[in-house]
Every structure is written in C-alpha cells, then in structure tokens.
Length: 300
Image (spheres, one colour):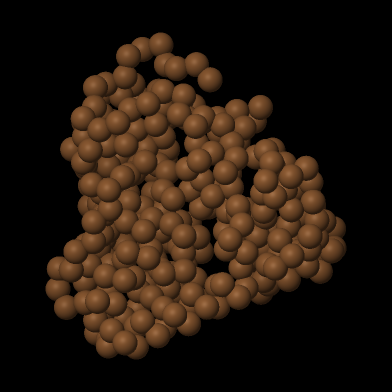
C-alpha cells in the first residue's frame, strides 16, 4: 500500500505509515493501515481530523476483536485510542465516565469497586468503550443502550460533540453514529450494588464464556447476528457447518458462531468461510445470516 502523496497534518501522538494491523486484531490476519494514528489526547485527535483532507477516510480501531481486516489493507487513517483515552472514573454513586479506549474488563471492575451494579456484562465483551457505543455491544441479556447516558464523539470534521443515548438510533448491534466519527468517551449509569454480589455475577459470566466459547483461539467473537426468533449458532450447526474448514480457517467445534484462524489463515480464508456458512444456512433454513463481525479494507 502506498502512503498518501499529500503531507498529513502534524500530531503530538504517534502517526505511522504502512502499519501492520494483523498484530492488533484478534484474528491475527490481514493487511496494513495506510496510516495508523494513536492520538495523545482528544485535542490531538480533533486538531488532526480538522486539518486532514476530507477525502481521506478515517476508521476507529478498538481491541480488534470484532473485525476482519482484509489482506489488501485499509486505505486512509486508522485511529487507535491508547492509554491516555482509556481511563475510567466515578462521577457519582451510580455513574462512571469512561474513555473511549477503556476495556470492558476495566469498566466492569471499576464499577464493582464503586458498588455499581448492572455493568457486569461488559466483563464478557472483548472490546473498548468506543466499540460498545458504536455497535450497541451486549451479552448475557444486557446491551450498551441499557447503561449509556451520553457519549463524547469527535466527528470526521474534527468537531467535538456530546450525544445523548437517544440520539444514537440504537437497534440490535447497530447505531447511527456517522462514518469516520470516533467515540472518545462515554458516561455509563448502573444501580447501587454490593461489590461481592457484583463480583459473583462477573465470575458467573466469565465461567459461562469460558465453558461455551473458544477464548484461547485466534477468533473474532460472534460472527453473525442472531436473526429474529433464532440463535445463529444453532442455524450454523443445523446446516452441518460445525468444524467446517477453508484454507487455514475453521468454524469452531466448541461454538459454531465463532470462526477460528488455525494458524496460517488469510483474512480471505476467514471471510470466504463465513460466506460459505451463510450460503449453507440460507439453503438449509431459508434464513439469511447477517455478519456481526465488521469487515474492512481491500481484498488482495
């Protein structure tokens, strides 16, 4: 991938050309980012986007758990929020202010220590606050829209806005956040709880995940959305796809809504396997599975 001809705006954080993305995503596969930007703070991000040629695309990257980066790489700027934007602080008895780069584990642990219940489910989602807010991340009967008060966003223009939950058009695993916008913070609200009871619920969720999901593999989390009235994993299983392999990619034997990189899979292998699963499910049940995993970048 060639770097942009026009010079990019100067930054106070880190800006790298042709940066490998495979090490930053859970599948450990895929191409490079034309530019990878880790801003020093919100102002650094806002100033950069305000001065960046509007024709250059911008994409935010969290923990890379719900993502296939195609082998041809990602054009434009990939923004990754590092430690300066990963802090979590308590602002009242039931409310936390969280940086967009903060992990679900950090948010749920901070909530536990503060005696705030209702955020335990974040323990089980391998992502960051920015990703939760954009995708309405959820698990174990709860979703981000259940706890979000408002979020701070830097728009593609560099403008900084605070959006209340109701402005995000939430549906299942979807929001109406505009393209190129980066979620830099969120306010989450729970209910008063006992830290010991909150920890017990977090332990229960962690154990359930460990038992049912291939956590120690190169995977991308839930591959397909659950269609109305169905469980995606059951449809995949009924279509005979458990253990199905293409190249170095495989449908997990443990949980059929997970795809695995067995070691040397390309992103093309992983995506092609997902499309084959979709084809077989449609043929078997008539249900059209929708990807939950985001697929970005250029095919090789």
